[in-house]
Length: 75
Image (cartoon, rainbow, N blue to C red):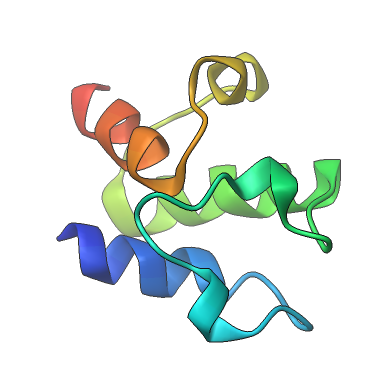
């Protein structure tokens, strides 16, 4: 999965946030719609789409969508 594909899949987990808000350098915690439920949705998406397992604490070491992508690549 490319970074662009990851960003698209990441964005699909949100209902109310404009697609234009999702970029590699987006600090996902700053999104108005971000919640712990979204963390679970993203964990599930990464598992389903990439076959990688992230844990909730992994989100503490990542700031941007690209950081999460890179972290998932290393798992």
